[in-house]
Length: 471
Image (cartoon, rainbow, N blue to C red):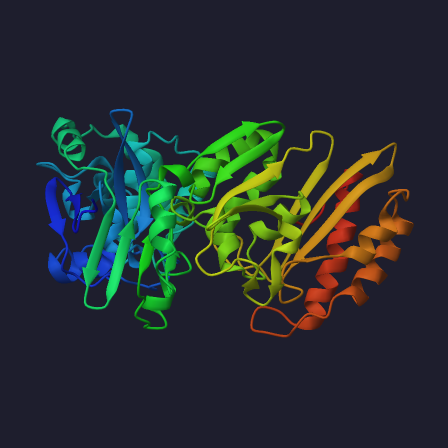
């Protein structure tokens, strides 16, 4: 029996909701329904971080914290979680992250400050060491247009030197435990919002709906509401579904549930494909990686989805679940621009990534910004080189065609060839003719073509320990 309301904690207050629009974002709910206006709207697309808040979830009797972009998070997805806003973190006195920000002169106009404070709070609660690398990683989703980042970085480096506001979390844990994790269907006007906790009930309901929208992080789907002003009907939230949230290493393959957040995948990926894991730091900010999933990236079918060329280069498969279950090589998934073999009422259940222990994997992302930006060109290369002979190679490009595309002619030429400058130069001539990219606001056709050639040269240089300019 499905419930018809969601329960969550707004700071330390238990909230039940069932009568708000199913397209309501957390940001609009905070500002319009509770006048919690510390959380700002800067971009409405999950880019600037002014809307950052922190979500707490109960895991093994402890609260696990992560930062989110409230501007692209749908309200009803908060069921069973705690939402922490900037107004709540001080207890009798300023929180150490707030005091450190003041003492370091880390705020000027102040618009971005609450979001930065909440990213700092996320670091603080997770006891993240304030190294330069970690600061850049956790602040990559927060833009400041006037203060400059040096005093903000100093505030982070100094935040642990202040006495902590210690308070008991037992009340929050007790309240979170009191929230039942059962399937939910919210009905409002002619729209529904579904939350399922297992695959069977999800498939059963999804088969009944002809125009359902699958939601995990909302990093793409939510923009249909915030930017295009669409009214989405029948949203199926997958982020709480235990049958879609997992990472397993078995039979020399990684099995990843389609709704597993990127940040949950990275600890395992770092040990198997470190270049792939490193790419995700540029794929999206901490807030994005906390909610976005591989299943969502594949499902959106964007020709510039950064994970797609890598997954194809690794000969990954996807498990599709509808009335029947089937497995499909990702090479064969894309049909045309944003069109795939995924049929109505089917979902991506799992991604299967082979583990190549003897291969080299390269992930080259070219974009205007280093962090949190859409690629102009992306190239993934999976190769096995023995005694300087290319025994295996697969080259996949994003941004050069209407779908992620394999450079079949270039890789065919390189197969079983000596890995040297002469053969790479010939492959550069071939790849130039193999793609016909477009001109758009991100890059010209000529630029994209030249980049695809240069990345082959970079691959050679890196193999020969010749330093390349990275960005």
